[in-house]
Structures are given as C-alpha cells and as structure tokens.
Image 1 (cartoon, one colour):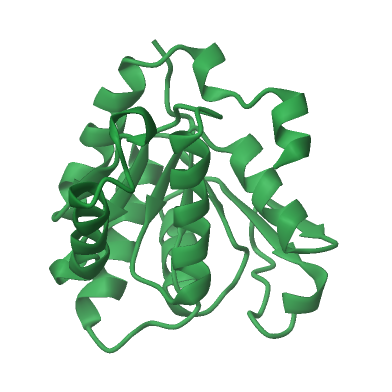
Image 2 (image 1 turned 30 degrees about the horizontal axis):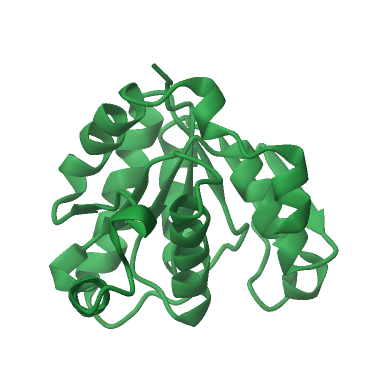
Length: 201
C-alpha cells in the first residue's frame, strides 16, 4: 500500500473562460492543504496554476514549483513557494515532477497540459510506473479526450495489454478519495520508474 504525500497537478497558465475552472483549482488546493498533501506543479503564478498554488499556501500547505529557466518571466514564477526548482529545459522539469509526485491530476489547460498528462498515460501504458493518474473533468472539460480514448480502444489501438488505469472525477470533492483508493492498491516500489528505464525515456 502506498500513500499520497505529494500530488503533481498539471493545469493551464491561463484561467480559461469558465469560472468553474478557477473555482475547482481553489477548492482542490484547499482540500490538499487540509489533508497535509503537498503540491508539485509548473511553478507559475498566473492562471489556474497560480490559483491552486496560492490556495494551498493560503491554507498552510506546501508548494513545490518546477519551472524551466526560459519560462521564468513568461509564466511569472511564483516566488512564495516552499521550493522553486529551476530546470534547464522541459524534459528535466517533467522528470523532476514525476520523481517528486505520488499521483497526477490534470485540471483544465491547453496543449502543454495535455502533453504532460498524455506522457504519464504513455509511461503507465508501457509499464514504467503505477502512480494514479486522474482527469479533473470540470464541467466536462476532458470529455473530448475521454471520447478519443474510447475511440482508440474500440479500434484496438489501446488493447488489453496496452491498457492503463485512468481515473476521471467530475467533482472536485471526489478527486482525493479516488486517488487514495487507487494508491492503496499499489506498492511503493511499483510507483517508481527504474533508473535505466527513466534514462531511456
């Protein structure tokens, strides 16, 4: 049985047009902080990223930001985090986010957010790790992605031996319980990616 101590949250550096996205980030940040769970995220101070980070800090939680040097200005690196790690590039950033997190949650976001969560799905599909992966499907934001994945399964591009567990939560309050239940079925060893495999990826 593994425990969730830190959650990596992927999300947009913009707030989006639906206020529900920012509200969900604020609510989930409070839930994480109140349960003593730290945030690992992209390090920005704007958009949904900034919202969840500030929410956790406001509720006494811990925040670790990981940001590439070239995005320090563009995404306005949040300086009030407990730890701000500046990486040389995106690959180093994503690897550090993986190493520090026990689970992955994706709030609404753009291409970068999509790319990050799909990479975790790919690693899970290839058997590189068993950390829980969850889509926070706020107001149906991730419905098109879920439909695409179902389409891939029907056409057998995602087959039984290449399938992976993907959690989908429609309500913010359901996110943490779903992650904890999934984590309970995984050992600490199963969460980790072998060093050799990591280098190859």
